[in-house]
Image (cartoon, rainbow, N blue to C red; front, top):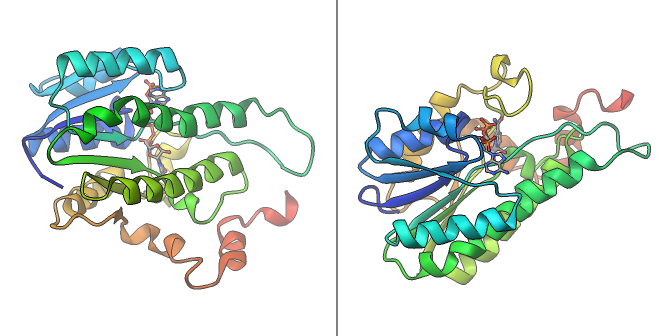
Length: 252
Ligand SMILES: NC(=O)c1ccc[n+]([C@@H]2O[C@H](COP(=O)([O-])OP(=O)(O)OC[C@H]3O[C@@H](n4cnc5c(N)ncnc54)[C@H](OP(=O)(O)O)[C@@H]3O)[C@@H](O)[C@H]2O)c1
């Protein structure tokens, strides 16, 4: 992908890796539009960064997505990249007994329908731009599920698969890239920020920026910490790896 001079829309820029990536892309010479629900958090990301702009977006709401796409068309008609980074992660309880599906349904609306709807709302604009790129953030859990978050894992697998379709259809028109992070010390779930077994998000974003700036940019941006998960099917060890990352399975 082109490294500077882009106008990049990035969802979920008010926290976590979204905030870090937005600032790094800005410092590389790009204009970045960050979008999410919490405008104060977005403003904090943008403070002191002249070319980071903030726009409100709730990707669970089709009306909000349409209004957002219109603002982009009016105010940033040159926008040539979309990074679908926003999302939530909910722990869901055991699949072995009937349960309330509110968290599962909210995850589908937010993490699956959200990026599908937003990409759809912006695709005509992207296709019309030179040097267009679309980046979807999935997860190592797309390849090996965490059984405590089965819907989240299934959605990430779905977005991985959807990204393959996008890449095939948009070949030579929009560069389609997947970033599949390993577990990171962000506030995605309660307590995760302090989990020493998880990767430092700053270190992760350093490596992501390095991979994004390669020519050609890899279709899948994978750091070493997620390689083991990504290679699971290829190495024919799914059952063993599911057991390995879900050590509590026997009592669940
Ligand atoms: N952290 C990890 O271990 C890990 C691992 C693999 C993949 N990932 C993925 O990385 C991405 C970023 O996560 P993170 O770790 O940086 O967590 P985070 O700090 O919680 O960031 C998630 C961002 O998404 C935004 N968001 C959530 N729902 C939204 C909605 N309906 N509309 C617009 N924005 C929304 C949030 O902003 P508002 O609440 O203000 O809207 C927030 O800024 C996610 O897709 C996540 O699944 C994370």
